[in-house]
Length: 366
Picture 1 (cartoon, rainbow, N blue to C red):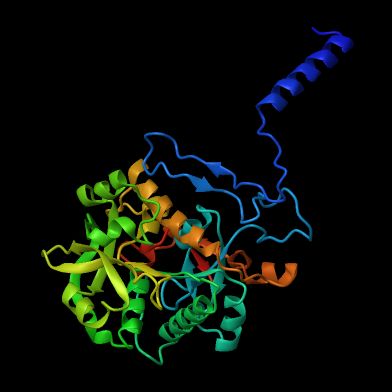
Picture 2 (picture 1 turned 90 degrees about the vertical axis):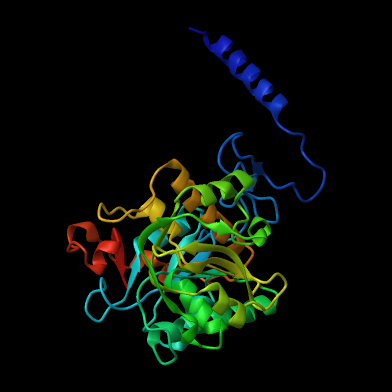
C-alpha cells in the first residue's frame, strides 16, 4: 500500500503518462472531426464521424440549455390506421422506432389523422421522414396517402431550399413513394407472391455507389446476393418494366428480387443523383424486422449478419438526416413532438395467430 506522499507521486506519474499519449492541442479555432474506425474484419468496417461540423461531441460542451434532442436527428415516422391500432387511433410499429434509435436518432410521431397544419408543425421540428410498412389504400383522398404525400413534398421543398431532408420508405412506404412519383398512378403496382419470404437481392451496378447502401462494403453487398437476409412480406410490388416506364427519370433501381413464383419485382431504389428526389430512398423489404421483430410463424432472418444489415441500413439513413437543420425552438416543443409521449403495447401477448397484429412485436398507439 502506498503512503500519502507515494500515492500523490503515483497519481502525478499516471497523469503525465496519459498526457503524453494525447494528441497535441491545435492552435486553430476549429478541431478535426473525431472518428471511430470499424473493427478490422467486421462486416462493414466503416469509419464513422461522431462529431458535428464544429468537431464538438454533442453534450460535452457548448452554450445554451440541454434539450432531449440535443445532438440527435429527429425522424418523423408516419402513423397509420387499422389493426393493430386501437379503435379510432393510429399506430407505429415499435421496430421502426428502435431502427431509428439504433443509429443514434430519435423518433417523432407524424399522425396520419392530424390536420395538415399540425403535420407541418411537426415536420418543421424533424430532420427526416420514414414511411413504414403496412396495409393501406394508396390513392388521393385517403388520409394515410395524403399525409405521406404532404411529407414527401415538404421534404423536397426543404431540400431544394438547401436544407437536405431525407425520406425513406419501407414496403408500403416503397409502394407509396412509387405511386406518388408516378403521378399518383396506382396502376404501376402489380400482384406478387412474396408474403413471409426471406430472400436474396440481385443488385444492379448502381448499388455499390448508391445513397441507400452507402454503409455497405463489397463483402456485405455480396452477402445480400448470396444469403436470404432480406425479409419480404408483401402482395403488391413494382415490376421493372413498369418502373422503367414511369420512374426511371426520378429514381434508380438498385436491386430486384424474385417472388415465390419466380416473378421479378423492384426491391431497392434511390433518387437519381442531383435530381429533384435525390434524398429519396426506399426498399420493398423490411430491414427493421431482422433485429426487432420476433414471430415463430414467420421466416424473419435473425443473427449477427442479418442484424448487421439492419444496423447499416439505419446508419446510412439516420446519418443523412444529420445534415438537416430543422430544430425545435424550445425544450417543451422538442419533448412534445417525440413518439415517447405515447403508450407502447406488447403485441406478442395480444395478437391472434396469423392475424395482422402478429406482424408486430410491439406497437405505439398514436
